[in-house]
Structures are given as structure tokens and as C-alpha cells.
Length: 323
Image (cartoon, rainbow, N blue to C red; front, side, top):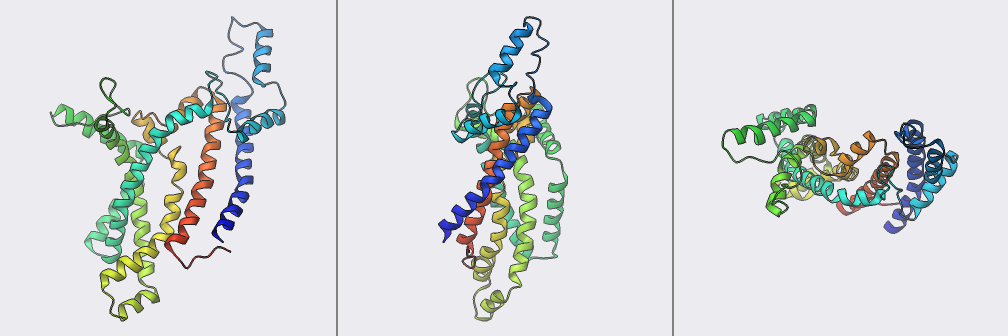
């Protein structure tokens, strides 16, 4: 039953990915895909040289032909080649993806470990001072721009702590330029960007957990469990918490595309060598094949994230059945 559902979802996702690639290809071609930046401005190139380069790159072919060539390569695992240096797009993604995964997974784990207890406490002590304080922090976390928070963290823990003679944290990069790269060095570089990114997750997920927990605690089966003499701790953490986490799976599953794009701002502020920073750098260089490959990669992650979220539903809630 579950295997059939997964196959059906995968088949239904094919038109979605196809539509994303088609729309992105058209939009990028309308902006920067019809030319190679600076090609016509190079005084060392003759007109016939420019025509030959454009023919070699396939830029003079009709759009349907260009799209067919690109999508055919994609089906064979080829995301195209960069217009800047001619290197494979997939190689750049594979080089930067480990750093982005390291940052985002750390932030997601921090968000889960902190937001769920905060949400449970807020639900169990609804209307109390603690609940109001958590609500204030949640609203602040959603309202504060991530780049502004990142700059504040750098100013405090990097600049000010260094000036005060206190142990300070690096303000950018994934490792030290000289003598770095060991686990301790990478962790110290990871603390600030991961904390900044996790702050947003904590603000959203804690409120979501609180709302879901309050809804589950009012269900009949919870009242029945209490009436049977089950301890409050068992009712809260065995019955209520498990079922209240089912909707949260959707939010966490949708963070899979964030492995590429969700932490782009954080990567830029902290000079973290990830995929999000790569997308911005190549977009400013009019490397539209790189942007197209990254966009397609994100679309695939969106599909996989939704599929994983639906599958995990069944593991958390046996009431869910797949037709």
C-alpha cells in the first residue's frame, strides 16, 4: 500500500518538475540567456568569432531546441555547464552542498531540540508568564530579519568579545585560512550561522507545536486516557505529543529545499561557502546555466521533501492510511 502510494506520488511529481524547468528556462532566457555577458564588447573578438562561440554554445538555436538539449542532458544526470568557466554545474553543487548541509542540518536539529520542549511547556502552562514570554520570543524571532540578527551576533560575539579580551567566535567562513579545518575549528565557525538560522526555526516551530498540542489535549481520547487513571506525564508525552508532532512533520519536511536556498542570506552574511551563496554569485555573473541547474535541484528537493513528509506521517500516526 505504502509502496504504491510512493510510486504514484513520484509519477505525479514529474509534471511539476518539468513545469518548473520550463518556466525557469524561459524566464532566464528572457533576461540573460540570449547572450554571453561582455562577448560583443570584447575588442579582441571579431564578429565571426562571436558567431562561432554562440554556435558552439548553442545560443543561436531556437528555444525549444535549446531546452530539449538541456533537458535531455538532465535526464542523464548532466545539469549543464557554466557559462563562466565551462565547468559542470553538478560539480559546483557537489562541492558546495556539504557545507550547506552541515549548516542547515545543524540549525534544524537545534530548532527541533529547542522548539518542541518550548511548545509543550507553552501548551501545558497556557496563559502563564512563561507562555507569554515564549510568545514574545516567538514573535520577535519571526519579526527580526535574519540578516540583521546575523550582523548583531557578529558585532557582539566576534567584534566586541575580541575587543574586550573574551573568547570570541569567527565572523565568517567555514574554517580558518591558516592551520584550520580540524573539527574544533569548523564547529567554532559553525556556531554563529547555525544559531542565527535556528532562531527562525525555533520561533515558528515552537508556536506551531504549542497550537497543535493544545488541539490534541482537547481530544476525546486524551480525556478517556485520563479517566482511566493514566498518569499525566504518560498522557502528555505518549499520546498527546506524538500526535501533535504529525503536522510539524510537514514544516520540517519542507525545510529540505532549505539545504540549498533557505540559508542563502545567512551564507552571504557569514561568508559561508554554501550553495545559496553560489547561486547569488553566479546570478550576478549572468551564469544562467548555473542558476537554471540550481533552480532545478531545488525543485527536486521540494518534491522529495513533500514525499518524505507524507511517508513519515504514517510512522507517527497509525490512523493515516494511503488510498
